[in-house]
Amino acid sequence: MNLDERIKLITSVGEEVVTLPELRQLLEEKKNPIAYDGFEPSGMAHLAFGVFRALLLKDLIKAGVKFKIWLADWFAWINNKMDGDLEKIRHIGEYFIEVWKAGGVPTDKVEFLWASEAMDSVDYWSRVVKIAKNTTVARATRALTIMGRREGEMKEVAQYFYPMMQVADIFHLEADITQLGLDQRRANMLAREVGPKLGWWKPVVISHHMLMNLEGAAEPEGYDEEKGFDVQISSKMSKSKPESSIFVHDTKDEIRTKIMAAFCPPKEVEGNPLLDYAKHIIFRGFESITVERKQKFGGDIDFTSYKDLEDAYVAGDLHPLDLKNTMVTYLDKMIDPVRTHFEQKSSAREMLELVRSYQITR
Image (tube, rainbow, N blue to C red; front, side, top):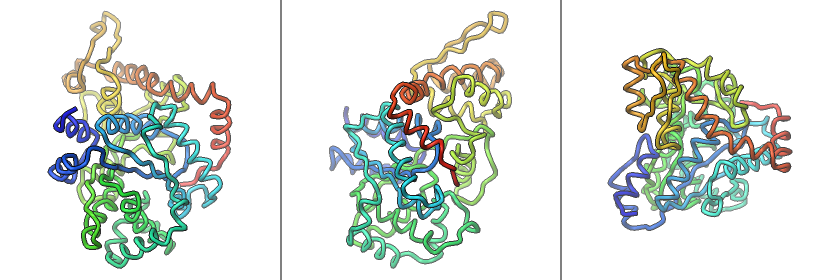
């Protein structure tokens, strides 16, 4: 794979790349740059986590990126996930790894690391303090939205450690690329600001798309200055809102029930979660799809690109019910390997039952 092909594949993962010239220079200088993403172990794995993230990881690995997954157990503790119970948080982190394995992430090419294992490091905390000393209180307050909470929800001083630690993670992990969701953009941009001031580097930020929840687009809630990004973050599929999410353990009937109730206005693309899934999941996983219809409704129709599907939908040539039925079929196909893994492997099944027994907290 040549340089242009690698860049095309890597940028296909990102909703925003900061910056493209820096990415090109990085790839010219390093054959296998390091990228990282961090995850708070909390809750059950949904579509965005268990299927979409795995697809993006596989493409990045294909492009020669060395990937580190940061299981941010201490961050979940600070964020009061699982009522701050670190033992439960650890169990959920282990469950996360099992989900990725089942989803086809090549675990021999991905490094899994736990935040708690860095917490005894004086160097790590030295970085945190240096970053804090180069960040104003106002800037830190703006960055708190990376926790999935608005400013008014913050009640503990410990929560101010969170963005400082997240920026420190980037340099601790020697990450050339931060490859997280758009909802983490403020921390990554802060890293670009403070890194050079402290004699470190300026990471390339590749922020991936936030899959929409089943209810459609929400009003901006102040998570980012750019309205389009803010809408994405405010509308994202969230494990803490199970009624508007699809989980990797849902049966086909459960998926169907949720999809049939989903927001899907005819001829409209904006705020339509099913077109969002078609664009960002289905056509990343399948080269073509077939919409099955009775002959009296025009018969079956094949699509080889998302653009063709969208054009047909906007023109009214594809009915919302046909789109919904098609999404049920293909989402179920993509979820099935993970669901089956947890049904058939006894240790995975026990892990799932344990996580299900926990009271999930936001």
